[in-house]
Image (tube, rainbow, N blue to C red):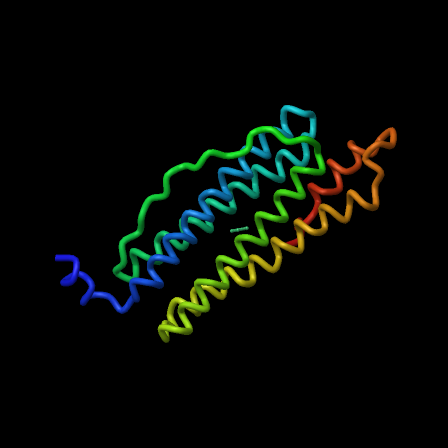
Length: 175
Ligand code: FEO
């Protein structure tokens, strides 16, 4: 039965596997940012909490986009299970350090899908994944900018945390 289904799609099994992995990674990113948003919220960082809630929603959109693509191509989209996520953070800054590392990991995963597409001559999926390439460039830049602000604004000054909360939340506002 599985072989019969396979004949109805041009999607290579190896590409499909990596797309399902990408779907899981995007879904995990949404959950991770949700936990960060909650931590920021309960520690008084009202503006960046909103920023992270929005990031979490965006990641869910990224997840759904790839999930639906697999189905559209005749593949089998696997619903990702919810992974255990970090709920507590050592500091305000650590949240953004982890967020940047997360984005870098996502970029590497996107590149892996594209490398596999090239190997299998899957031009449709490669073209689809280009949206993620652009998105990751922006998301990595935004995450780096947040860390730059920690260098520019002294977190331990009288209004440092308050200022950082406001400034970080403005990142990417014009995109
Ligand atoms: Fe969709 Fe920022 O990974």
